Length: 476
Ligand SMILES: Nc1ncnc2c1ncn2[C@@H]1O[C@H](COP(=O)(O)OP(=O)(O)OP(=O)(O)O)[C@@H](O)[C@H]1O
Ligand SMILES: [Mg+2]
Image 1 (spheres, protein in one colour):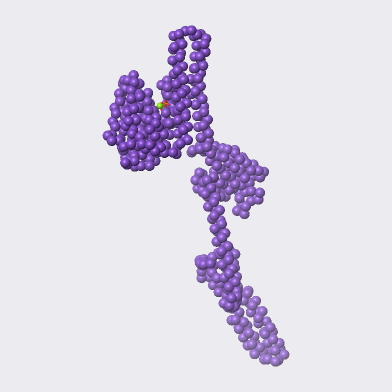
Image 2: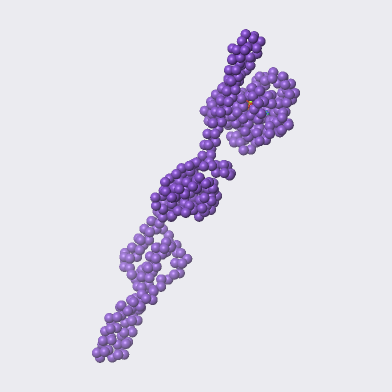
């Protein structure tokens, strides 16, 4: 294994110092016996006192000189072990005096290699766990016994901001039920789950899970709180409930009227030919309304089922526009409404399903006739354009555009984003009176989505509206 040892600033230039105690002990140990011998020789007269003193000094001096390099090696080894224990970067000590060939130096080198390897393994394990925790889509908080945040993952930081560590959890996620559940789990070790709504930006709804560790982790983590964002799920649930409520309501109204007329025809109006004729006309209108509603609902559900299947037919929008205008001409005449039609010559065909694009243009043209001012003009324009409103992901830089422009009361700005919601009507009574179900623009949106196009609405109160559709332009 290849590894590089860098000297830490502290270790660099630090020459191992022999502790004074060690040097004196070593010298004392090795010179004690000969010095004692010189003393005995001097006392017994075998040697003169002068020679005994010279001999003793020579012994002390030589043991000091010879012991020094060994002791320096021992001190270097001590420092090295100390550096390893303190997790400091260090370099292999010079053990030339202590070691023999293949001896202590090799063992120390082996120790350093295995220590480095273990350290790297540990670091990579930790970073793997860090990455795992960070890439979890759910929000994670790891708390200490006091309920303070010790660690978080990136989902938590993205939602609740950076620098969460060491802050009280209750301060970061301000929800009394959640804090209460967290404190109960801290006290009784029982995991808990709950749903809660966070006031503020986005009004997020979370499903929370709180678990307490049986014993706290070495890092002091006692409790884990995970939050799963269910805002979208809740919105879908709500939409589904609204949809059922709206659909039932739309069906209930004409149905109640039918039941009423049947009772009248059987009772008070029995035999009244004129009343029967009139009531049957109204009943036919209500039945037609229900039929339209059911067929619109079926269209929507079919479009949803096939949302990802791009239709592959070729559609000539010019002939579709002309056909749809001819269908509403009689209604337009009633309101004295004129059409100004501007179709670019040789408008390229678009890829799509003709019946679906007919449905789109039928609704836009019908709406214009329904909601425009009497004796006004409706302009229908079709062209190829590069002037595409931003923020819509059309797959091409060029679009085939059809614009239906009316002169009317217009639509207030706050309604514009909601127009394509199912059953959404600016003026419900007016739309109902005109036989509308409020599903038309929702169908338009789905059809255009399936064709990789989009609807763009501009409106000015008191002036009128422009409903434009954009479809991808494909060069022949
Ligand atoms: N050209 C327009 N001018 C003014 N308001 C419009 C126009 N087109 C649509 N709206 C408003 O948008 C609402 C939704 O339109 P949408 O076409 O979805 O439903 P509808 O026309 O009421 O019923 P349906 O199309 O199902 O018969 C309408 O009820 C109306 O309030
Ligand atoms: Mg409509």
